[in-house]
Image 1 (cartoon, rainbow over the protein chains, first blue to last red):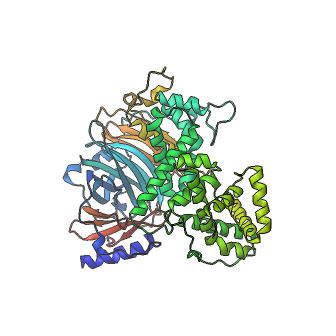
Image 2: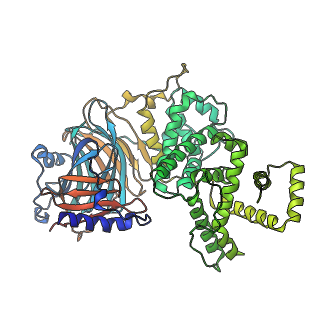
Amino acid sequence: MKLALTLAILCSVVGFSKAQQPAAPSVEALPAVKPATDGKVWGALVYATNDAKGLTGSTEAAPAAFADIPGRLGKVFPYQRFEILGQHLQDVFREYESWVVPTKDLFLKVDSKGPAEGGGMNLHLQFWRDQQVLVKTDAVLKEGSPLFIGGPKWREGQLLFVLVLQKSR
Amino acid sequence: MNNAVTALVTPSAIPYNMPASTAPESGEVSDSDLVKRCQAGDTRAFDVLVNRYRGKVYAMTYHMIQNETEAWDLAQEAFIKAWRAMPNFKLDSAFYTWLYRIAHNVTYDWLRKKKIQGDGEFDDSHTDHRVAAGAEAVARHEPSPDTALKNAELGARINEAIAKLSPEHKQVILLREVEGMAYEEIAEIIPCTLGTVMSRLFYARKKLQEMLKDAYENAL
Amino acid sequence: MKTPSEDHDLIRFLDGEMSDAERASFQARMDADPMLKSEVQMMQRMSADLRTHLPAEMPVPYADFFNSQIQVRISQEEPITLPAVRASWFDWIRIPTLMTAAAAVAIGGFMVLQKQTTQTGNSVVHSIYVPNPSVQARTFHSEDAQATVLILEGVEAMPADRKIVGFHIERSESDQEVATTTLYGAQGQIVAVMAKDARNQPRLLSAIPRG
């Protein structure tokens, strides 16, 4: 089932991404060796609002290590409620791009630029909304020091993207 | 909230008079002065050089590989390599010639690696100079009554044809036709003999001629 | 069958690399050989078209960001070491330790390059590029939240009736061969696949849209 689904997804995706290339990929093309990584990040999309009745009812909860994130968001953004809509724990590949996709609607492309002086990681980030890049940035991400991105307004509140370095090389 | 004060930084803070592109005009800092400043570690001087030549370098990488994203990355890589090599640049040639050589090498290496990876993109080879009897598999276009459209179609056909050339043929055509370089300059950049430059130019043109034959026949 | 030197003559004529005498001689050959003349004419026309359709200079997409990334990367390089030359007045920009824990504002279409100290252990935003000129970006560090903040203002609001499809992704597999990343949920199920189209734009294919 899983294999079939992978194949189906890959084939349909590859249909537009590799349209000009003759050879159809196969499941065997999947890499046997996991690419080297420079660290691991946790990303979440958060709905911030003052309207308790307007919450979506998402049951997502931050991992224990990041349980204080909603409280910290409250120190920056003028909202009472912070609801995690989606979350993504992602290895940051050393040589390849990585994607942090907590939701289908807003996601982040992460390129490692190697370890940062004094710890953490140098990253190139691209914040995407569907097919549109909202911002590109070069940043150093340090453990324990999250990056909050104040994104578009939605309903009565705002969508916030949180990126935290869980561990670095 | 106890947030740090925000500061405004805009490009107007940049001290140099930055031309939109290409060679310095009268009254602007010369390339050689900027190079000397770069050699002293002045990154802002390098930024001026990047501004001055990024359009030309990008055009070269784009024509060579015809992929906007990769061309952008390669052009950037060329400038970074130029920065690294700056201490060794003796100003014995024009900065742009030197930069172009670096950009060319970066792009050519990329093309060669791509070719080695065997994606079958290139269908001619510098080791086989025989021109195929028939045209390449390029779709035959019907003549358009509209001249502008015709030009656009011809432009597309030219790009298609250039893309099908081998890296070696592509480079001589672009150096000669786009950059307008003399044979000696091309030979220095590649590097190779004058005879090789002429041979490659001849076969590259023959190849293009074959590929574009129907476009010209229809246009006539 | 033409000899290499004849081939060379042809292109040297085309490229104006002949002496006057050579040129006159080649002209005489062309006059006597209609096929050669026709070939030269077509190649001349082709050369003109190549020059027309292949510009020697092109606008660089995201040009400011192009420059800023170069500046970021070269600032991370080892300093250039040459015999001492008197330092210029704007050397401040290349001193890696000079960066203050400041903030910056990026105005749409422009790029901001800044450097901040990394001594404090805080995350730092070095540069920002916002392609949409109607969007403004600013960044600061919040002491209260112990977080680095990047604010985007002027971003078009998400339609209120749009349902935000949230995922819970625990791991991914990247397949460089087909340039896709498969994203897996907590139970190991495929949640989505990230790919790119011919224009290098991301294409997210959701396998399991959540309720």
